[in-house]
Structures are given as C-alpha cells and as structure tokens.
Length: 110
Length: 110
DNA sequence: ACAAGCTATCTTGCATAACAAGATAATACA
DNA sequence: TGTATTATCTTGTTATGCAAGATAGCTTGT
Figure 1: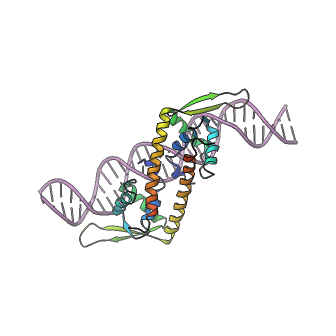
Figure 2 (figure 1 turned 180 degrees about the vertical axis):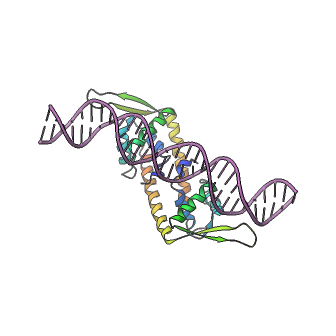
Figure 3 (figure 1 turned 30 degrees about the horizontal axis):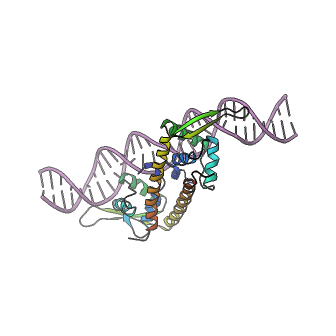
C-alpha cells in the first residue's frame, strides 16, 4: 500500500483503536492489520512517533505496566480531548473521501 | 482540508479529469473544486509539478495552443499508459479507503 | 549453558510531495 | 496609464511515513 496515501490518517486510526480500551504500541501494529483485513499496515518505527505526537497534544495518556514476567508495556488510553479530536479527524476524512469519490464517479461527465 | 490527506491522490485526480478530454493546468484547478463540490482544492504551485511528473512517466502528453489573442495554454491529454495508471491508482485508493473505513466502522468492536 | 528468536520500546536519517510565495508575461478594462 | 485577470513556472519550507538499527528481557530448542 502506497506510503503517501497513509499520510495524515494514522492519527485517526490510532485514536479509533483506542476508543474501546487501552492498548500498547506493539499490540496496535497487529490490530491495524487485523481490523483492516490486511489492507493497512504500519511499522512500529512509524507508530511510536505518532503516539508521542498524540500524547503531546493531550489526546492520549500513557501508563507503564511492568508485569512480574515479560517485557514492560506502555498502555495508552484516549482522553476527552482525544475523543473530540477523533470526531474532527473522522469528519475531515469523510469530507475528503467524499470529494475524491465525487471526482472519480464523474469521469466522462461534464 | 488537511494538506496531508491529499498526498498521493492528486495524480489520481488529474488522470481522472483528463479521461473525457484534454485540459490545461489553470482549468484543472477550477475543475477540481467544482467536481468535488468545493471539498477539494489544489493550488497551481502544486498542480504543475504533478503534471510534469505524469508527463515524465508517459501518462499524459502536452500540446501548446497559442491563440491569436490570449495567453498560451498547455493542454494535456491522457495516454494509454496513463489510463492503465489511472486504473491502478483508483484500485489502490479504493483498497486503502476500504481498509480505513473497516477500522472506523469497528470502533467499540473486538 | 548457549544460541536463536520473540516481545516490546525507542532513535536517527532519508525521501517524498503539497504548499506558500513569488516571478514572468500577455490580455482586458477602466 | 494603471489595475486586474489569465496562465505558466520555480524556489524553499515543512510534515511525516519508513528503513534500519539499538536496546533489553523473555522463551524455546539443542
């Protein structure tokens, strides 16, 4: 899948994945592929910087969990501001997709 | 509309606009806004480099038209390779959009 | 005990492409 | 004469996804 198409959509994807429950980065990588039925894929080197951006913006909050056995995990949960941002980004995406589809559907038209 | 969302889609939009007839750059700027019902907007400083990329790839071909009165216009028409590329880009876009929608629709799910 | 592989987070540097801003030039109009 | 419009083109900036690698602890096989 083209790298360029993903630009600007990963934050929307992350916030969506965090709406039902908190998740950690490594888990999100797999969830994206699963939820999109293999259509979308995001590398961890991409994911972590996006998580930091969202945290800086106050849209998500981290919580370290260090189990007695296993590697520590950093869980993120969405904030109130994050839910508002999610609505905004989702609306923006739908507006954009509608505009593009309108053009695609009109090929051969006036 | 977010700059990042547009990334990778302008070539698709241009090739689509050139399917029914040849057009020149300045005309395309207005057509994009009109065809998308005001949802999409592309500056001419963005458009021309994209046209050059498409021309270099053999997807479109230019033709200068110098009228007796008025500024010269550079008309572009789509080639056979351009039509194939359009099909490829459109399929890629729909695959990507389907993957993203699948994630958006599943919020609160498993 | 040792190696290999898995889980998990994080960092650096690169490539791409949309855009703002401005340049150029001819025409139209007041 | 001056301002606005049509039309193309260039330069520099900026954002961000990704490859590649580092780190570290755990698990599994031989």
